[in-house]
Length: 488
Ligand code: NAP
Ligand code: MG
Image (cartoon, rainbow, N blue to C red; front, side, top):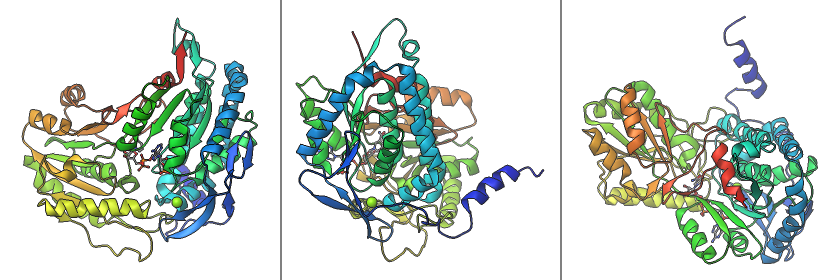
C-alpha cells in the first residue's frame, strides 16, 4: 500500500481538481425565517434583508430581520425552556449536543460550500478547518455535560439562565459552535445572533438543531444587523451577553450593561506579533508568516498582522516572503486551489483600502505581487508594508485584511517591547529553535495565545481569549465552561 493512499482517497471524495467545488445538492431556500421556540417563523414586522455572495455581489437569499419584538419572543421562549433544560441530566444534555456534532459531520460538505458562498473564504479552509472544528467543539462539550462536578471540584456549578450570544462574520459556524456548545453543556438557554453578512450557516445549524429534537426554545436564532444585537444586549430578561466582534462594539456593550446584573464576556480584536529570530528554520517560518496573515483573507482576530524579523535575517526572510506571495492564488472561494478568497463585504474592503492609503501616506513602502483580480466581487491582493514604525497607524490598528506590516529588531528585549506596544493582547507567534527563548517569551508577551514555530492552530481543548483591549473570558477547553456558570 502506498504511503499516502488514505490521504488520496480522502482527496478523491472531495474532488481536488482545479475546478470549483460543485454547488449541486446544496439546499438553499430563497427566504429564511427566524428560528424561535422550535419553529421557523416570520419576523413580526415582516422585514427581510439580502445576504450577498461577496465573490460576485449576487444575492444568495433573503433573511429575516429581527426587531425588538422578535428578540422579545426569542427571550421569552428561552426563558420558558430554561428550567427544563437546566434540570435535564448532564448525560441527556450531552446526548443532544453529541447529535448536533454528528449532524454537522454528516452535512459537512453542504456547510463548507455555504460558508464559502456566503462569506468568501476559500473552500479548502471551510472544508478542512471551519466545519470540522465546529463539529469537534460540539463533541468536546458534549463530553463535559455530565462531568461538570469534575470541572469545578467542591463547588456546585449552576447555569446562568438565558444567554444572548452575538457573533462576527469571519468564522460564522465556528463562532456559533464556540458560543453554543459550552452554554448548552452547562444548562443555559440561548438567543444567538449571527452577523448580517454571513447568516446562512447559523440558519442551517438551526435546521440541525431542529432535526435532532432539542427541546423547543433551548436555542433560538435571530438574524439581523447591529440593531438586532443591541436589542439582545438591552433586553431586561437576559442573564448574560457573550460577544465576539470588534473592540468598538465590545466597549458599547460593556457600557450598555453597566449597572445591570447581566454578566458579560468579550472576545474582541487583535494585532498579533509574529516574531522570527535568526535561529529559526527560515523556510518553515516563511510558510508560517503566510499562514498567519493570509489565512481567511486576514479576517482573523488572532492574525499575525505584525511581522518582526531579527535584523541579521531580515533581507533573506523578506526576499523569500515576497517570492512565496507571488505564488498565492487569489480568486474564486469555491476553487480548491484558491489561497485567498473574497473580502467579506464591500464595507470591509473599503476599510482595508483605506488603511492601505493611510500606510502609504505615512511613508510605508508597499509590496503587492501582480495578480489579476476578478472584476466583480470584493478582492484584495496580499499586501506587505515595509519601512513602518511603531507609531504608524497601520502598525497600531487592526486592519482585518490581508495586510502585513514588517519591522526588524536586534535584541529580544527590543522585540518584546515592540510586540507589547499596542492596545491589544490576543495572539503572538515565536519562531526559534531555542526552547529557552520560547519559554522566556511566553512569560513576557502580553497575549492570550502564543504559538511557537506554528500559527493559527486551534483545538476545542485549548482555551482562547485576550488581554487588554482584546477582551476577557476564555472560550474552549475546561476554561470555556466557566463563563456560563455561577456558584451558590
Ligand atoms: P462587529 O461589527 O463588532 O460585529 C460583531 C457582531 O456584533 C455582529 O453580529 C454585529 O452585527 C453585531 N453588532 C454590531 N453592532 C452592535 C451593537 N451595537 N450591539 C450589539 N451587537 C452589535 O465586528 P465584525 O466587524 O463583525 O467582526 C470583526 C471583529 O471581530 C474584529 O475586530 C475581530 O478581531 C473580532 N473578532 C474577535 C474574535 C475573538 O475571538 N477575539 C474572533 C473573531 C472576530 P452585524 O454584523 O450584523 O452588524
Ligand atoms: Mg454574505
